[in-house]
Image (cartoon, rainbow, N blue to C red):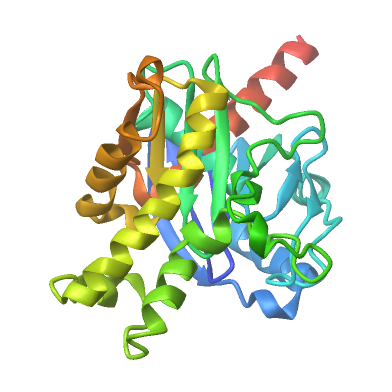
Length: 300
């Protein structure tokens, strides 16, 4: 079976063909997100036309997704006009194959569950740290969507109520304002404006003040995880996003978290995501395979 997979991000759209548990013919296309949701969908359709002989389509995308209908429940201004986009309907009308649509973090969690760090674990949490903080909950090997398909919005945990001002910023005082890679760059940039991204910051980690700011940011990551550990009592938490490729971050989170949680919760494992940029596409492929099988059974 061959499945065309597309991972829609704010900067680029990754695509490929899934076959025999591998992603092949991987391509990248600029999203041009600021041109709007309709433009992005036209690009997705053109990308899919470039692949042949596929029996299903799996799509991982930014934004909150109604997985039952394959529509965008909500997307911020990174992709203007994307909210309400009927992705599944649009794709199926053109290609006439079963199509599954997942939120990007949920898709990455599904990929890690089947192929990566979560393999063999029925229940775990997955968080990604980048522009914001994304989250996903895996229960009995399946991503839990919640009543409105939006469970796992861990970036919205209030960690600094003294900074809360939802009338101006719904995420003010919340986890992603302090624990994201964006937050790290802002924090370090206040003292070292020449350091523009995580890679540049960690290249200067031996500078004592930079080290101090990195460690301050790592504690912000830990504060959110303390809440999640005590609520979910997970066996494992998978940490993803490019910044988590820094082994120092994961090791420090692991060590600092242990002293912040009750002893009865300390069996939790803190691990790096394993699949990198392929996680979303692999998760979308698995969802598309399930959708294909479900419809085939219904026909039968």
